[in-house]
Length: 105
Image (tube, rainbow, N blue to C red; front, side):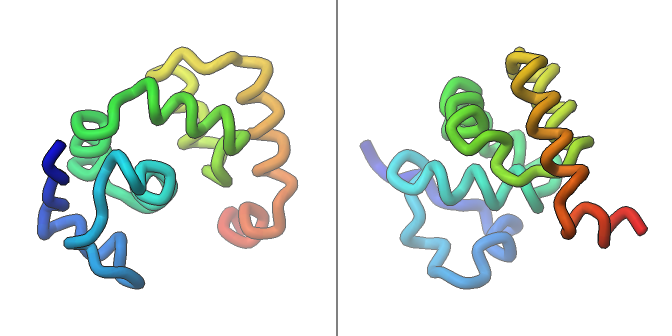
């Protein structure tokens, strides 16, 4: 399978590496974390097309929410039909984190 080129508009998300070497399959976990955490809507659409909802869902479950903020976790809970009790735990953990407390102040 030929690697999918990352759109130029998304290269800023991967400022610390060469975006031309990223493969959505081989580097899916890394890309999912960056795009779900900091990407805009077009980046999320690209991710869903190139990685797929099942891979994103599996990543969120394996990473226990992946450090996303409560608002994003609730969004993905609805979109990907994530287990509500697990998302509740991730949201609680995110709300208790120092980073979330700093950002919502």
